[in-house]
Length: 193
Image (cartoon, rainbow, N blue to C red; front, side, top):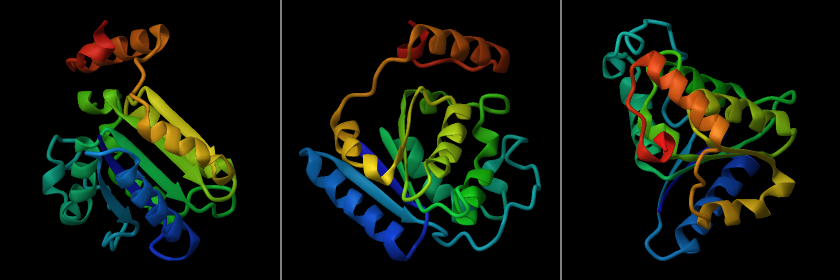
């Protein structure tokens, strides 16, 4: 299983916990691989709204060198784990900025079928609403297995890292089929049945 850990800060408690979860993901089962990114992770500026990603050319964005390695890691992993501090009850600017670069992946724009088979776990080190901000984005990407946890619930994370991804429920599959049909996207087998 491949795990991508995305830390919401490159210093302090969030970075320490991201590193701890990264180490546990590697040692949870033999054969696990993991990537870790601590935001801002070289992302030096905000999305300027050029629209190239919406035109189907996300690699032509002038910030693609900074964002695409993280996106590639996310697309190749089975579990995407976000660890974020809470700033005024919500995800910090680094996380929101990164998520803004991925808005084009939402089902309403240009959905990616491989996102529909992933598991996303968002852990907030403070208010759970920070994790909910990330979970909302993941649901808009079409991810069917999304969990938002506060730091006190992080023990649950180890179980989520080792359990197989669950099949989306009937109504989730129905909603995904409708949205995919509308967007003209082919769904993976786990969602089609």
